[in-house]
Image (tube, rainbow, N blue to C red; front, side, top):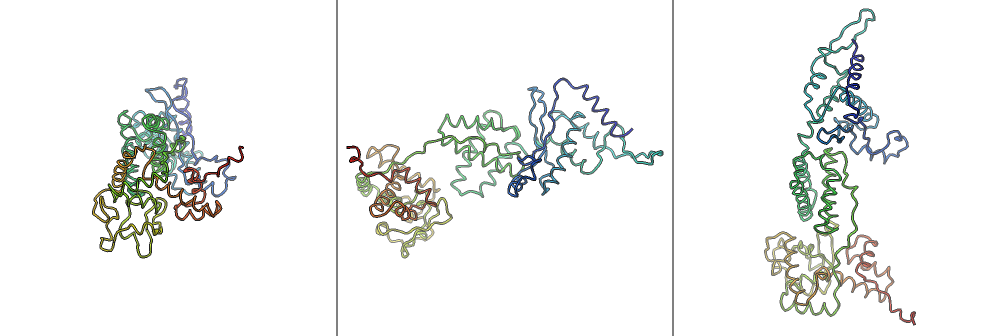
Length: 466
């Protein structure tokens, strides 16, 4: 009896035994997000982008508890090691046919498939020679179906093992652990702390809802959106967007390592949020604050002057070491947000306020807790928070609201410089002179920043209203 006859007979029996609703969907092929029939119309960049994504076969099977079709883990079986479209698609077509054959034979990801596995892979092929036609015919030995080629054997093994994937190596715990282990060497220390904190909150939320014990495929766009909505209700749109960014970054690593099919988190919309504005100080406020700081906390005053005169962020000042301050050449070497090292000049007005650094340890941080170059064993974020807390006492003294902060001195002095430049320069000239001082990478970024802080104000237009 031929193998084809056996297959047809079994399929016929299964079809008539099925209920009205099929228990599975027809297996489909994912080809990197492009229509494979239009491959020849794609340019080289589009083809490369498609091949850079994971290709796989996917299907859904009816969950016995919900009686609804549920998407099953994607089946790759090493297909993405193949480099060309032709090789991948041929491989996936064979896999698609093998999976459909298994489903017809009763493969069920919610049940034990040991009998089915032995049926397909348990015995060697028996070859019978038809004396009349003198042809070798592969037959079924003891009710076992034999794959025709080594490739089909490997594909069937991968398909049969599909339900085992959920139990080994793809748990939520394993995936989160992997991303944290990789991210620690991909981000600076401060960014990693924030990333780890947000992923930790997401992990805690999954545990509270008893989701944590599931495989990573359990986390869908709906689950992530549900979590982000709760973050939004509890905090703000900005924090919700930051959480979305970090979870998307985590899923990108999982996609790159073929632990999830695609990074669906990037499709979740970013909400519009109004950034916290640090107000600029008036000349009178600036004068009074400087005078009060000189009396109560001269060390904090020097910190504020670094923000004001060198146009630095507080966290950048906390990173400065004695060796980063070249008094002779009037240069500062800064570990900035957008560059490994950024060089700025030390303006004369700031240089005059610096103490003698020649007897200080070059490796010591410039700003100790209470004096220059003193040892202070703390993380840079904790140092920044310390200076922020001390400045809050100054704000309280002057009854200033939360919209004022140390960062406001950066806005204040950039505004002051720009308006001074504009007295004798065009807008373009003023911005060109300001750009190397402010540290903005592009003119567009600087112009947006100046608009945000209202640095450019119109002249009095009363005469046009008379």
